[in-house]
Picture 1 (cartoon, rainbow, N blue to C red):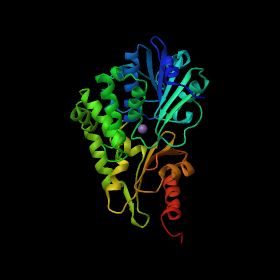
Picture 2 (cartoon, rainbow, N blue to C red):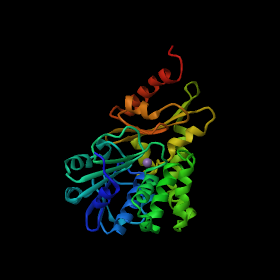
Picture 3 (cartoon, rainbow, N blue to C red):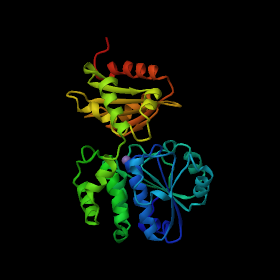
Picture 4 (cartoon, helix red, strand yellow):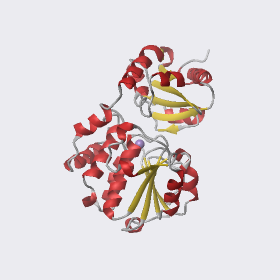
Length: 335
Ligand SMILES: [Mn+2]
């Protein structure tokens, strides 16, 4: 079905009830895109709410509109109510209902008009309108383009700009990956013209860690990183016990998986984090090796070509074993 700009505009006309949903374990792009959209839709005159499947990191809790976010896991009745009452639902930074965790069921049951804005590969057809582009840095950048496409540039205020800027900054690792398109810098430039203070955003996101988190990072790199030069691979694993020792909080392991990639000739990195339901995995790669395919095939996950997540219900030991047993197939002769 094709919808025109006017059709879409009608869905977010003043007084319409709009809900924004993002993926489980929300990251900077998920929250930046969602709160950018939230502040924009408020300026449109909509009644807007944001629902996240679960809690998100403390370093994102300063974003404009943060106080209005409903976390599904902690406020189920309220969240379900918001979803069922919405006329229009935005699905931001994910493209399959399964990525929305428990929100999945209320989301698929909802009769609302659904708009998906995302940059992950292979979107599933569970929405009415899709804006998907894997070549774009972040969903936040796509939200900016969506607002421009609606001809609503004048409704981008400081709150919208700051949120979207945060999404682009975090999803590109401060412009180190997914950030080779000139268009990204045009969007950033427009956002900065709205008064976004780049240094302030950087400081709030990256210089906001606890002492324990820094020590945990040191421990991981010194004691827990395993380097397998033969397979151009390095990985870090962390058990529940180790996390507890460092008073682990959500978001503390953000970025850990990127460190092994700075080692010369390492092109594949993995992080294994034990939790109550098994092991959560993060993958990063350089070059052509698709961690999206790897994770989809072996670890029930997915993401982008060079950055993906996954899950394992096996024990930590067996998960690491499984991971290591796959390496010869991808990175060398099987002997
Ligand atoms: Mn993203």
